[in-house]
Length: 324
Image (cartoon, rainbow, N blue to C red):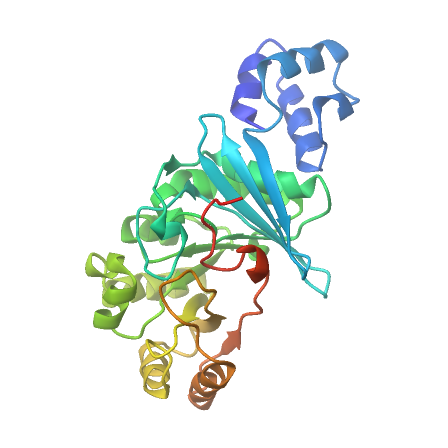
């Protein structure tokens, strides 16, 4: 739903008309025909001039655990993937993409191995969430799909600010970044809403992090964590740290001790992510993950182990590569 285009087409109508259209879309309407308080002539005009979605669904895959992965194409033919994760406690979380592909080539991530196309618009990001909202309520959104959100800062923040209309509060919205500093600085300075910040760290020292994430050569840990400290000081909120567990690479008790020394326990919460295979590494065993977490627990650094969802359909963290 490109509301900017809707407003252009309805320029001769009262300003509230565009708001009515958005209210219907954000509540899960599946077509203009469902918008019963909008005149037939207006609905007909919109059907002729404005596609109901900026994305064309191409394929859906369903996991044994209830996860759904959707592949879309943009109007100019670029692939985009989004994932709906269902949890036993009733949560419905959508993982959205901010770019088609990604230019940052993190070695553990399937998206980094595909060709980067372009940034997505605010409306293309929202249409991923709206696609799932049309079938059931959603209450969490994470910007952890294809792409680096801080490379598309304006569209990402604009989309995040509209999510409460879909039933997703700011406190249940998370923007994840590898630490792209220009965007991260803007996030710290400009985003006053309580949108959560997550940092993809994956190593406790620069040399190892640069092997896993080449962006670290440009923006090393010291600079990234300095911005995280500013975020904590200015916003009074913790930073979530994502740490993918790679067998024999970054998962030893020594790495855990270095991580605990690096991060202030009052400012961070670590999310240990079992590796979802994409061909480059082997994932850490449950025993190695447990031993790693035990070191963090002893240091009183808060941590959890992420529940893997959708691995059997290549919908889990790091696996999105726009393949049907």
